[in-house]
Image (tube, rainbow, N blue to C red; front, side, top):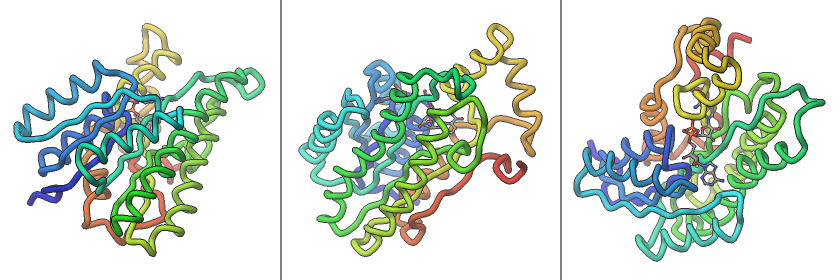
Length: 260
Ligand code: NAD
């Protein structure tokens, strides 16, 4: 089954982690890819991994900052110039930020995290939804987090931005369903990517792997998620099979969000 034959899939944060995993999954099923990231090196690695599993895949890589609106407009235009359409959009780039009590959370860090995670997702939808509305079809998957549907603690910027992503998803899904466009968010729990390793290093320093074991000991499944497990979900949600799933948020967290 090739769900992405002749489909164009745009992925932000395509140079690492969940973006890379989704890229691999949809490319295996025939997608043409437009990858966006700050990291040229990361995208080149993704491209090589994609070509190893899908040698015929067309892969456009665009270095852009998702928190900068003109750069977002430009990455959408470049994708259209290259491929003529955008069938599916994984609006995924994000950062975690520092971990502090609210009173110690630096204001400039709050602004930085919200700018990337929330404004970046809004800018992406603002420009891509215009294209999809004209096409009369499209699917958008925004990356929220388990931290977008419940409190985690010590993550003011992250929690605010990811709750905001859930709100944007519900709002825009209501607006665009009538144009044949579905919009959903995913809420991953702890998935072992470079971002989570960075977070564990903040918690545990050199003993970050021990901190990781303790962290997942409270998860009902007692383990981290794997990036490919998220890639499978995202591929389904980006495909035509998920057209009627709209304006909602789907957890993928081993049950973590229901436990607390
Ligand atoms: P990652 O750090 O492996 O990948 C994130 C990618 O986004 C990197 O390649 C980075 O260069 C890129 N990026 C960061 N800021 C950018 C910007 N301003 N413009 C363009 N690119 C930018 O992290 P990941 O775990 O793959 O995270 C992807 C998304 O998933 C994020 O939104 C994150 O908040 C979310 N998430 C991750 C987890 C997890 O456990 N890994 C859990 C919940 C949510």
